[in-house]
Amino acid sequence: MPDVVHQGMPGGDARHPRALDTTDPTAATDHRHLNRQPDSRTPVLEVDNLVVEHRNRRTGEVFRAVDHVSLRISAGESVAVVGESGSGKTTLAMAATGLGTRGDGDIRLLGHSLSAVGRKQLRRLRPEAQVVFQDPHGSLDPRQSVRSGLRELRSLQPERTAWIEDAELLERVRLEPSILDRYPHQLSGGQAQRVCIARALLMRPRLIVADEPTSGLDVSVQADVLALLKQIRANTGAALLMISHDLAVVRSLCDVVHVMYHGRVVESGPCETVFARPEHDYTRELLAAMPGARWRSRR
Ligand SMILES: Nc1ncnc2c1ncn2[C@@H]1O[C@H](COP(=O)(O)OP(=O)(O)OP(=O)(O)O)[C@@H](O)[C@H]1O
Image (cartoon, rainbow, N blue to C red; front, side, top):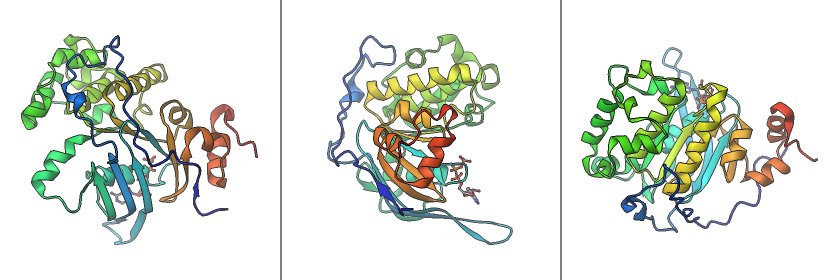
């Protein structure tokens, strides 16, 4: 079994955000925030040789959840990290966005090394990467209506969030304005996840990290939420880091895939290539385990 396989990755070029679809409600009518194109040569996220370990508080035992992982995401690019439960995907995503245990190695968000920036700059940088989690109800404060939750976010970043009114923001995620006065327990899973996506969108992030964003939802609304993420990415030019164990989701949404196994990236490449011609045994196993195994290895 090869140690790590890098299949023809798209050249180190940054991709340009796709053209705006102005017929789409998720498309901005006020395009000011979209003009903040990053220097196209600076990746949105670069992770170099990241190692993250968790210590078991009770036994003191150290477990290496992320083991020398490197990846980069360019503007507008959509990158997936796939692997079975416990392979280290969430730990990687949390470290990469500065939200979880940072670990060793270098993480650069928009070219700024998270370990080198001061607190003030980190506060400015953090909103550039927004995370949408698996459990939307767990992400929302049960004591806050949607409106008061948005108000609180706006108070934390007044300039950044002034570009859009609440009702229009909800329209971008295809929710009625009446949702503003509801509390999380009054929302369905799909509605709650749309609220979470709206909250992320409000910050005009350059990177959206979606950590299993549909796995807690009814099958009937999963496709809608994925379509929404796809549209938002196309319309805002935000890059997407998708954490998933669902290869069908990854295939429908992402350009590049990194396959994680026991904390390591064992295979990387364009989705089309990796799914059509997986090189690593573990990738082949994942593909074979897919319902229908539609992208079963030809080898
Ligand atoms: N805070 C923590 N303390 C101790 N161990 C942890 C902690 N967080 C994660 N782990 C362990 O690290 C490993 C990787 O977990 P992680 O959640 O990153 O994997 P994952 O691939 O995202 O899994 P899942 O798909 O189930 O969320 C697991 O064995 C997990 O038990």
